[in-house]
Amino acid sequence: MTARLVLKRLSELENDALIGINGELIAVPGVGLALHDGGTPGGIMLEPPPQVAGSAGHNLIRNGNFIVQQNGYEWLGIPTSGDIRYIADGWHFHRGGGSTANVAISRTYTESEEDAYTALRVNTFSGGLASSYSILCQQIADARLCIGRTVTVSYKARATNPRRIAVVLRQDFDSATGTLETFAGNAELTTDWQYFTHTFRVPDTPGSYTYGAASFTGLWFWLDAGSNYDDRTGGVGNTSGQFDITNVKMEISSIATPFGATSYWDELLRVQQYFEKNTETVYMAQGGYNDGATVKTVAYIPYRVPKVKTPSISGITSSYVTSPVASGIGTIGFNVLGTANDVTSIARITGFTADAEILPY
Image 1 (cartoon, rainbow, N blue to C red):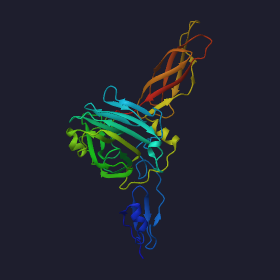
Image 2 (cartoon, rainbow, N blue to C red):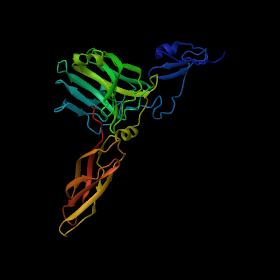
Image 3 (cartoon, rainbow, N blue to C red):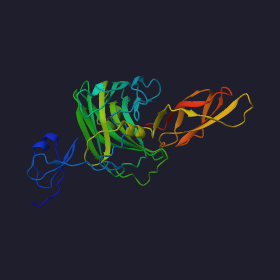
Image 4 (tube, one colour):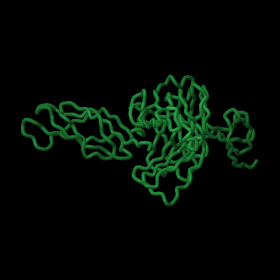
């Protein structure tokens, strides 16, 4: 029989029972592709293509299974001030209208989900107003990543009570031309883990739009949204309660590919392009004018991974040095200046935080 290529979408159960025609390619959401031969039920599962940036299978989202926990594992009553709080590495909680949340990460939340390493739990407390909202979001450098492309978002989620959430792709151009949003879809959550996929096309950007240096593409999960946002969310509504999510993936593809195994170290390096907590010791050298009683010291500290933009440096810890100050901050490292405690000590920097995360404005 002459082979032909006809891409279909079936559930795993449907595909297991199907005898497809020779050469028929079946897309199995959450599993991959199956090639049928006209005689074997289920066909032959194909190896996934190499996961290069911009291809099907490559996850644009970092820390989608919350395996990296540089920034801790629990955040209560957030935000305590303002409207944005950085929570799990790569992720922000963004709120308005008096809404707040408790957030935590744990492997116990995944229970019997064998393909899920750990999960994020967000307990939302809605402000109950038309202007109230709670958003779990991630911003990826460059608003141009998905322009004119077909994108698929996939994830596993559940809730303590049935509730609706919305998934939106947001492009902020960091310029006077503003932002664009593409509604990916709603998901109706139950108390059981479910696998959700949303496939949509991101429109071409109007020719009048310009890009700033800090433009971003954002994946936003609307968990609570008053009536002011019905047009943007498909009517999520003011919602309080527990929401669990894991295995978040966004890929340039017309189908969802499996989340797959992810190495902690590979995922850490991806996260650290935006946010790095470092506790490695760097010894400082003598520098500048020294009067015999005090010793000026200096050190250049490289990041483990170059940053997507110039980060803010905070949380500098040290030994045998007074008032260390960061200077000359760039995308690959920074300098630290200070005064040694005495002429016989060896001044050292023992830690810092470099934050290049993009806020969800």
